[in-house]
Image (cartoon, rainbow, N blue to C red; front, side):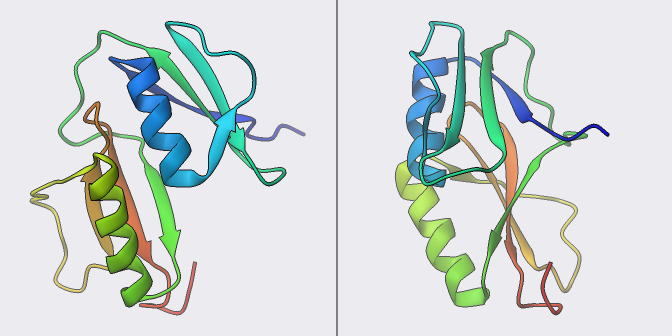
Length: 125
C-alpha cells in the first residue's frame, strides 16, 4: 500500500519559501537546506512533509493542485489568514468563490496558491 510521503511545491527562492512555510506550519528542515531543495517536517512529530524545490515554471492562476490548511472555525480562520499575511502571504482576488465559501485563497511569497479552510462552516473536514 502506498502513502503520501511529501507534498512538493516548486518555488523561485528556496530559502525564502522555507522561511515562510516553517513559520506558517511550525515545520523545520529535515536536514541542511540546499540552494535548490529542502524537505520540511513537522517540528512536533510525525506528519506530512512539505518539500520545496527550485522551479522556473510560472505559477498557475488556477492551479490543479494546492494545499488546504484547516482552521477550527471562522474566527480561527480569520486569525490564521492575518498571521499568514503578516508572514508574507498575500490575499488572492479569487474569481471562483461560491456564495457560501468556507475558504480563503492566499498565495505564498513565491505565488503558490493555497486555501485556509473554516472547518466548522459545514460540519468539519
